[in-house]
Length: 199
Image (cartoon, rainbow, N blue to C red; front, side):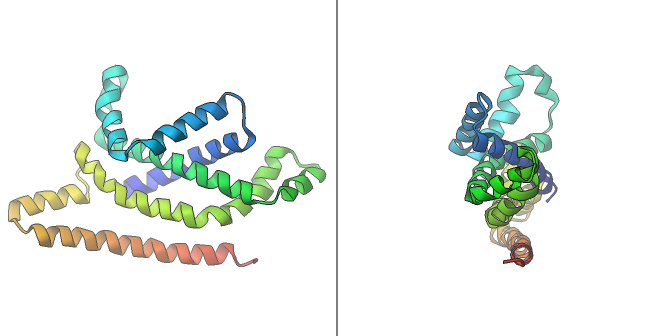
């Protein structure tokens, strides 16, 4: 949960920045954003985690002291930021252009119009997909054990190896993940109702 919660906050911040850059097609930054999104959407998360933890320290020795937990959080953040960026961009594009025009006509700057008018409406549209990505991120934290992070999946593997109760151990961890996901699914339902109350 700690990895997922830290990851979702930073992924959302990066995704909003990428989505705005892509929406306004900012020169140079737009091309860099497209490259970032293409790479992190086009390669498996497990490969990205191994590249971050085992590969980058070979190229940049300053990263040699990065621990497995930090590498996992960074990997999850960057991976899901790429997906969320496209979701947020699509949500921004779904907001009627007249909303921006009306905001600019009242004397707002483009950044004020985005912050006060467009993004709040886009948030309502993007919420279901963003929550689904958060749920997927929670499940993807199970890959952190491949880097040596002793999270729930690693604990389960150690327990199963020592007791030989493989079915029981993995069933237990599956039920825990399922229960956590069900809680956040219910939170998603309530959040969607709250955001749609004006509609």
